[in-house]
Length: 83
Image (cartoon, rainbow, N blue to C red):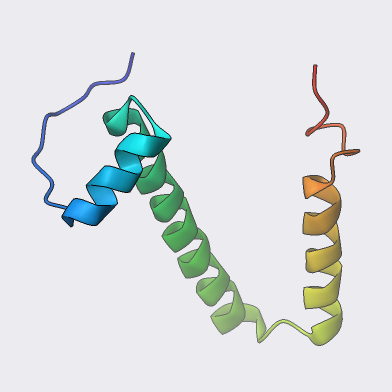
């Protein structure tokens, strides 16, 4: 199990009410959301660094990346099929 640290977070009452409708484990839900945001920001930083070094992505490169993402998210993709 990963090391953990207890912190206090203040959220709007409406968000807490909706959050409790979604999960019994608020800590795990928030931890997943934080992990997602960290990955998102790190990826954004890496993409900016890449573009600074190699130039902006072309429309063709972006279209190819979008197609690969769509394929990876497809229910028929080997990584998304139920075991």
